[in-house]
Each structure stands twice: as structure tokens, then as C-alpha cells.
Amino acid sequence: MTTNNLNITIAGGGSTYTPGIVQALLNDLDKLPIKKLVLYDNDPQRNRDMYLIIDFMLKKKGVCHVELVETTKPKEAFSKCDFVFTQIRVGGLEMREKDEKIPLKYGLIGQETCGLGGFAYGLRSIKGLLEIVGYVQDYSPEAWILNYTNPESIVAEAVRRQYPKAKILNACDMTISIEETIAVNYGYDRKNWISDYYGLNHFGWYTKIYDKSLKRDVMPEIIRKLSISPMKVADFNAGDESWQETYSMMSVMTKNFPQNIPNSYLQYYLYPDIAVEHADKEYTRANKVMNGREKNTKEMARKICEGKKEDILNFNFGEHGQYIVDMAISILHDLHQRFMLIVPNKGAIPNLREDAVVEIPAYVGATGVEPISLRGNICDFHKGLMEAQVAAEKLLVDAYFEGSYQKALQAFTLNQTVPSARVAKLVLDDMMGANKAYWPELK
Ligand SMILES: NC(=O)c1ccc[n+]([C@@H]2O[C@H](COP(=O)([O-])OP(=O)(O)OC[C@H]3O[C@@H](n4cnc5c(N)ncnc54)[C@H](O)[C@@H]3O)[C@@H](O)[C@H]2O)c1
Ligand SMILES: O=P(O)(O)OC[C@H]1O[C@H](O[C@H]2[C@H](O)[C@@H](O)[C@@H](O)O[C@@H]2CO)[C@H](O)[C@@H](O)[C@@H]1O
Ligand SMILES: [Mn+2]
Image (cartoon, rainbow, N blue to C red; front, top):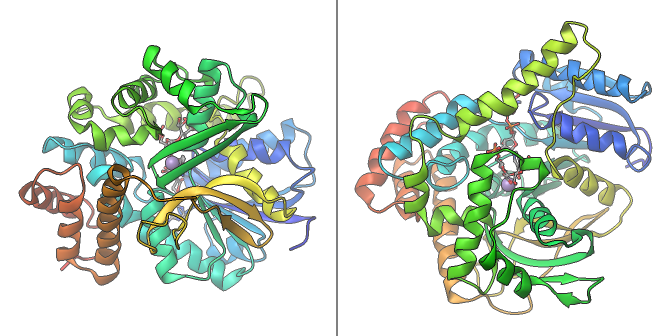
């Protein structure tokens, strides 16, 4: 790969996260010199809106040497690329709304990536992401794919089965968001941190947070602080009640299980009763995102269309964009920087099955990912939770490839947010009806 004149394609170009990623790209043009930026999406209107926003951003920054392209054609999008950033949402927020509302009808967690909502989303996402990975193999097999598409564990497992040699990194911004939120609440600089963490995506625990300037593991004191005063959301989640509730739940979790700092998403598996009690069955997170981030994106595009020049750009996604851009820089310049990544276990967690897809720290360089193995076994509590989740996710991916209703029912039954096979079947059948246009046929 040349270190100059890069071609970068964003698949899911119309995503609400594209401006944040482009902002990070523009801040780092010296380290990641781009010649061409392609927005690829299967929804031409969303892609057009985003083209207008990104074109506005480039002009505002005085960047004229970057060719900006919008396309719905795979060959045009994926030929001669160096990096492909993937962030698609198959079925859009309309289907996310169903993922959340159908389980809630049956008294179960309704969530984007956790519980049965995450499984429904998984069965939709796999096809869309495999299609894109396939295009990259056909048109630019040397390109690096940096994937943010959810649900990460499920799509990573599927890609690994179909394209074991694909040059892909699967990443989640949640650990970095948790770290930033902890740091601003309790007065640390997370840039000094070396974090040890293990789990599955949206399903893991910190075991140590070594602060290089303080020269100590700050995790025990953070756990004490969490139990005294719950965290306020950081600026990138400001005014967002759902995220405030989520970050407050981290205090509940550490009070009961004070050995580790958990990933905030564990609340859905450890306290599903609380989450269901607090849920509004008529107005879920999808509705909030439609009326928030999505509406805001359309508004930015509308103002640009009307020729407005001032007060157009209005977004703050925290470290989300910078995180993926930093990975590309680390590959390009062979920096071996450390990231939390979703990778095949292969012994990194010694007492967990080898073929699990786990989230652990890893170094990233020109040859890809070098995962960092744990120095010992994980405890039975975490192992038990993870084993059930891994098995359920694997069954779901089997269901996708085999078109097997039985495997899907097993996956739904094994999901730890589900109390009985009867309820699992009711939700599966309901979701099968709602997802006819997206899921493979399950027989
Ligand atoms: N890994 C992480 O930590 C992380 C963080 C934030 C968001 N995400 C994920 O990023 C994705 C985008 O989120 P969003 O809220 O911006 O969603 P969004 O709906 O606003 O954007 C997704 C875009 O993907 C497009 N799309 C859907 N299917 C496609 C396909 N098959 N081919 C090409 N384009 C397709 C849609 O038209 C849409 O423009 C989601 O998968 C979300 O879960 C992941
Ligand atoms: O409910 P949503 O769509 O607002 O967010 C779902 C995503 O949440 C996590 O990430 C970030 C988010 O990407 C970032 O922009 C900011 O708002 O903070 C969140 C965490 O604090 C998660 O990692 C993603 O996988 C979800 O898709
Ligand atoms: Mn995530």
C-alpha cells in the first residue's frame, strides 16, 4: 500500500456517523493523505444528503485536493481502494424499532445489539456485510476493511466463516466511550491509560487500568468512586437520558460485583428486569435516534441545499470517528498502537473455546492485528456468562448459513435474556414475519 494518495470508501456512506469519521480524517490528513473519498450506500437519497454535508465540510476546511464521490454502484465504490470503512444498518431504524418493540411485547429486553433484538439485527446484518466484504475481495482484495457494523460479534463470526482470509478489523467504540466518561467524571487523562479488558462485544470486563503518569492501576479506586457517585454522561452524550441511565447502571453493577469495571451493555444481561421496567414500549431508543441524530442529519443537508452557510454542522460523536481513523493510521505507518478489537480467540483467553470471537486489546500494524493474550484463566462467573453467549451467537450464525429454523430457535432459547423456550418461539415467529424481506428463509 502506498502511504500517499489514498482511496478511502465509506460503505454506509449515508450513516449518521459519517460526518464524525470525516472530521477525524480531515484532522489527520498529514498522517492519512487522501486523494479520493467515496461514499457508497444502497439508499441514494441518504447518500446524496451525506455528499452535500461532506462536500460542505471539505470546502469549509479549504480541502480541494480530495475527490469526493457518491455512488450506489459496487464496482465504482470498491475498485482501487486502500481502506474501506463499513457502517451499514440493514433495514434502517424502522427495523431497529421492531427489534426493540417485539421482545418488549413479550416482557423481554428490546435492544439494538443485545438480547433477541440483537439477534434479529444479526440475521439482517450478516447478508449486507458479507456482500460488501465480497465486493472488496473481488475489486480490491489488498484493501483493509475497518468494520463498525453491528452486531459486531455476530457479523465478525459470519465474515470469518465465509471469508477467513479477508483483511478485516472489527471494532467497537464502547470501551473508548466508557473510558472517556470515567476519565472526565473522576479527573483522569485516559491518554495515559493502558487498559486490560476481556469479553465478547458489548459483553466484557476491565481487569486493570494502568495509568502511566500516576504509575499505578487506577481500576480499584475507580470502582470505589463509582460506588459513591454515579457518573454523568460526557459531552458527546450530553442531554441524552438513555445514555445517562446506562452510565448510572455502571454503579449498580460495580456495587454488586466490585471485582471489575463492566461494559455498560452487561446491564441488559445482569438486570434485564430493571431495563424492561424502565422501557417505554411505545417509544424506544430507535424512536429517539430517528427524532435526534437522524433528523439532525437531514436538517444539516436541508440547510446546505437552501444555500445556508452558517451554523450548519452540528454533531459530536466523541471518539467514534477518531478511533477508526487511528486504526487506519496505525496500519499505514505500522505503528503497533493498542486498540480494543473483536478477534478470534485462538487461545488468547486460555479457558474459553478457541473458536469464540472475543473482544480484547491488540496491537495494530501493517500486517494487521496482533491480539494480546491474557496471562491466566478467567473466572467461572464471566466464563459461564460468556460461554452461553458465544454458543447462542454461533447457533444464530449456523441458522443463517444453514437456513435452519431449529438452530435459530436454539439460539433464541439460549439467549440469557430469555426465560423459556415458549417465549423464545413466540418472539422468533413474530420476528420472522417482520423480517421477511431481510432474513434468509428459515426452515
Ligand atoms: N461498532 C460500534 O461500536 C458502533 C458504533 C456506532 C454505530 N455502529 C453501527 O454503525 C452502523 C450505522 O449506524 P447509524 O446509526 O449511523 O445507522 P444509519 O441507518 O443512520 O446508517 C446506515 C446506512 O447504511 C446504509 N445501508 C444499509 N444497508 C446497506 C447495504 N446493504 N449496503 C450499503 N449501505 C447500506 C443505509 O442506507 C444508511 O444510510 C450500524 O450498524 C450501527 O449499529 C457501531
Ligand atoms: O443508541 P445509539 O444509536 O445512539 O447508540 C448505539 C451505539 O452506542 C455505542 O456507541 C457510542 C456511540 O457510537 C457514540 O456516538 C456516542 O454517542 O456514545 C456511545 C457510547 O457512549 C456502541 O458502541 C455502538 O455499538 C452502538 O451502535
Ligand atoms: Mn459497539
